[in-house]
Image: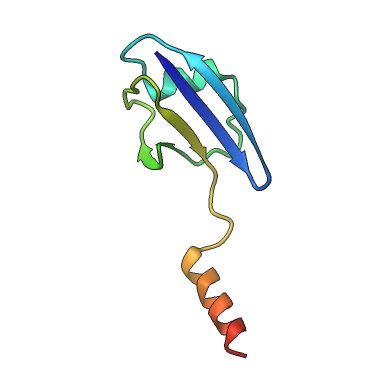
Length: 85
């Protein structure tokens, strides 16, 4: 089966397509991808958080998640306050 592994930053991304045996896990896909794991905070398949032990399916897109730089609620409050001035 083929799985796409994506690591994204603002303005750029790295992508690896890996061939894995049926029943492969997120951890196996990560090892096969060769992508840097520094700064990775979690994993998601098509936007849904998963654990390294989760089993993947053919055609899955595994996303490597980075930590949030700002709390989304606080960022929204700051934008709303700036508009209200």
